[in-house]
Length: 435
Image (cartoon, rainbow, N blue to C red; front, side):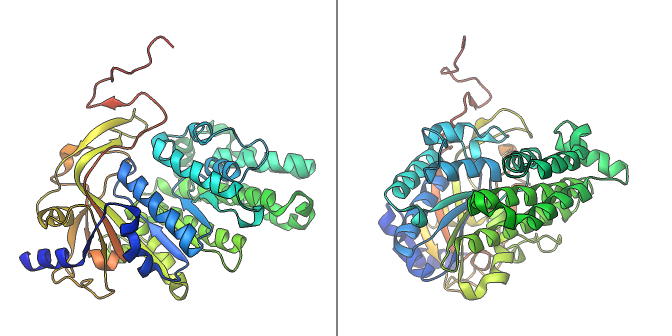
């Protein structure tokens, strides 16, 4: 491995300020899709460096919007705020604090707050047609999206709103519990699929009648109807196990991305923020053997002629916000030193410090030894640092999975807006008691 370590030193660009991103901007060139990853959903430096990259892409390369691994309704509220739409909120903090679905810290954090305020200030200095957007690509918001559809129709077509409510009543017995719906459809050969499809179909058939309300209002409603349809499929396939539900989710995110590009017109350019497991090409990991596809793979396959740049992120050690189990309170957890033989340990042993790697497109990216698969850390919203010895790593051919990589040697946890945060299992002294 000594030869590959020397190679890493040769291609590593020191990363201290936004000016050090020049090699990445050069690699992006005229590409229309730049996908920015993260090795966890709770690391401050991943958010702050994606922010710096996004700012430069917007200012210097004319990128049009940021689309993230978040729910459409919540993120569309952010989009309304940054575009100065009526009754869209008084501050980024207020808008982000409304993100209430667990894990709240993914987008309701101070790092994102700073990005949103920058986007807002930039937009308000420009005409409405030249304003950048912020959108959610995910598929989880089944009930919120159904409510958004019926609210929209109640305003523009009360008769169709009544029909949509009647169709969506199919979901009422499940009391807004997606897990309950998934279990029920697994046990009994029935579902609400046709109802969700029917609402989307009716909305689309009546689209010309809604032109008076403006294309933004209709686009939002149509997307929520699409989310409802695909969320129903996602939760119905979730109980079967295997790759089916994962593939439904990532295909939905790509469908949404394509819709956003079309919505923004022929000169649109997209920045995507998601976990490495979504933006790094699945064909160069063990995901492929499991029958899984992901966003990075699909965007590369569909838009190669438009230019696609995939940027992975990683760290050797630090702290992270995560939880012990799904739905549990967030905690500030330690991230132990990367295990021996992993890509992160190799980067650390190379003593490159915080660095940007831009690969040359060859099988080894320009570094002898990187053509072989290495363990590559992936931390989810549910995390157990003690599992590092046998979990939390994905075998990866790094320079094939990504076009570039941002490595931060030691990272710290993201700063959530929702408190309290348990630290190492203890309640912090700043816990707001008595209120």
